[in-house]
Length: 346
Ligand code: KG4
Ligand code: ZN
Image (cartoon, rainbow, N blue to C red; front, side):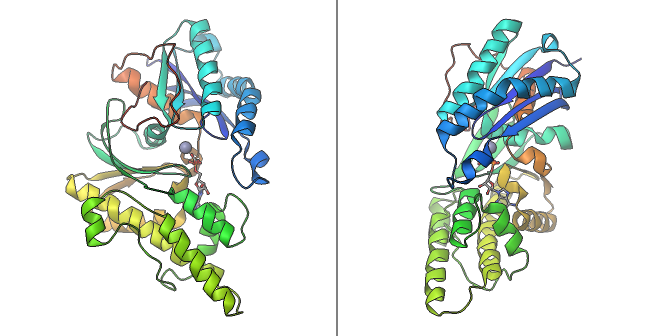
């Protein structure tokens, strides 16, 4: 039987704890402090750290109860040690180290962003030998080439400014929607016309593609939306919010999917895995399914509950590291708020 891995996630506002055996989820619990941040219009790191401290043990107990397992039966402990908010990461890492020490089991400090991809194995089974991964969230927009999820991850490109989810949240604010605006903009966009307004596609001119084939930039797009809204408000007419949302969402999805398919084609890869909180976005899901279908590329996207931050993604990556024979991390390993995506285990 494969080892029972306890995974802890505390990089931002979710406190997630889960138990995974091999590629199977045995139990999990997630608590979120998002309600405490909403009124500030963004995550307050200090508030998030305190919430992790309060939620960690209850989440652990709830995960064990849902798994019907005892703490003593845990064979290894994995925790996200970066990238993320330093205070939040520290609470999770301290809890994981204490548990590993008390239980006398190996400790794995793993990469949160790579976990967003690893979790797909719980749903769609073992990964193929090579694949391209697109990770999109409030903090990240990155393209990876993955030869082995635990040992060989190469970052092909990333956003030079805002992440996709961050751009949606900012446009949500411009449209007067509550924080986080991403899901609200998605909903509005569904009843608008994607080609109503011709918003710019960042880093997509031939010259930009030469220098930044796999990088993204969304801040110019956000500014273009702001300028368009300013100009329109001078006209005194009601803003067509659905069309603005749909045209903006189309610009984001077009660039993400174009560059991802370019990576698949240039690397001769037939499988794409999409992960991260923004992969809940319906414009991205639809376009990726259509364009991958045309190109004969298999696209794997985990269900939404595994796309937002959770403990299962960390436990699954810990489990993959053990399967690949990666040595455990030292108990004096630190946290790394800017952890490189090619560093899967600390
Ligand atoms: O991965 P995640 O849960 O947290 C981070 O690690 O950032 O991603 C949350 C981000 C937020 O910016 C949120 O607004 C965005 O993903 N998001 C969406 C949708 N669902 C979540 N953006 C657009 N459409 C959605 N359906
Ligand atoms: Zn995340």
